[in-house]
Every structure is written in structure tokens, then in C-alpha cells.
Length: 241
Image 1: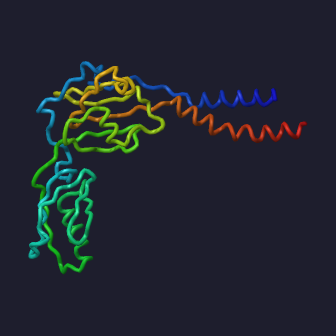
Image 2: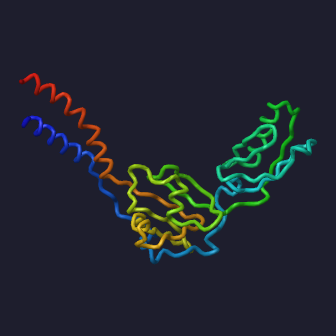
Image 3: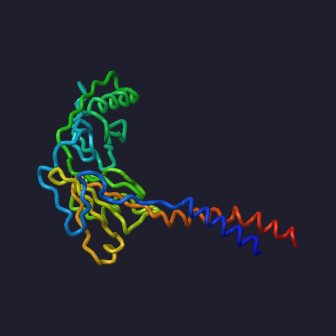
């Protein structure tokens, strides 16, 4: 078995060398300052300006839908947090990310499929939801989510479906722009969960990024490789006997 141990040790050394990663320092980009949890500033009113996708429908937006000549199908709808709303005859309608013209076109086609003759639909956004945050990285359900009440960092992670298997819970970043300056708050969520630190508030337009744990990936790579190495070596040892 000495030969097996030597070959296994050599293989593990190769795996560890191949999986080794170098994490670049945080806040290396120009105009970015790494902030600790105590000094990450809150945004001001001026920081909530219009976004480039001003014309696109968002979750919790209110939309006026009018169908010419069919008053019973004309109504005000609110887009749900999942980006959809229910509409008579056709059921669930995907609206988030569409323009009002695209929504009207979709409604016309689907109403036509229900035998409504030549539907003429117009849609317009009557009330905007400007309150949302974005979460990504090693999270189960990354994306943009509306803020309808106070949301903390722990709650934001839960809204995103929780950590995935490779998440580094001691390295959760919050990106925030305040008065033109972009900040990065670095948080240890395990410490927050234990009550060692306060659970910070997540503001509209914040971006939460959950870091990666390279050591967990390396362990999984090793465990996946072990059967591939051991089985042929066991067979060889049996033949030698």
C-alpha cells in the first residue's frame, strides 16, 4: 500500500495546486473605498435618481390596462413581487422587464387566443416602485427584489433564497453609492447571526454580493477525485497479491 499512498499524495498535491486561487484586494478600483460596518454611510435622497431602464415595468408597479370597446377587460393591475399579474381570461401575465408597448402586444395576442376578436390594448404605468435591492454571488436565487418595508442584511439573504453550498458567510459585501462615492461594506454574516454585530439595514439600490469559499470547492474536488484514484489502485494491489 506504500505505492498507493505515494500516488494518492502526489495526486492530492496536484489537485490543491490546480485549485489554488488568489483573491484580489477589495476596493481596488478607482474611486472605491472599503468601509467597515460602522462607517458605511446611509444614502441621501439625491442618491435615488432615475435608472436607465426608466421605461421598463418593474415588480410592484401599477399599470392601467385599457381594451378598446371592452370595458369589462379594462382595469388597473399591480405587478406582483414575482413580476407577474393575473388578468381575466388569460391568467398569469409576465410583465417585469417589458415596455408598456410590449405588454400591450402580449395581451392582444393572448386575448386573441381566447377568441376575443381584434383586441386593441393600451397600457401605461400609473405608479412606480422605486424601492429595490439586488443580491448576487453565492446565493440560491440571485436577482433584483423590491423593498416594501425595512430590510436587513440577514433578511436580504433570506429573500435571495439563502446561501448556496460554496458561500463564504464571513465575506458578504454591500455596495452602495452615496453622493457619487461608491462604498463597499464588508460583513461577517456568521457573526451577525450569533449576535456579535448588529444586522445592518439594506437600502434601495444597494447591491449585496455573497463571497465564494475556495476551500470548500477544493474539498469537493478532492472528494470527487478520490474514487477515481482509489478504485484502479485497489485492483492493481489485488493483482499483485
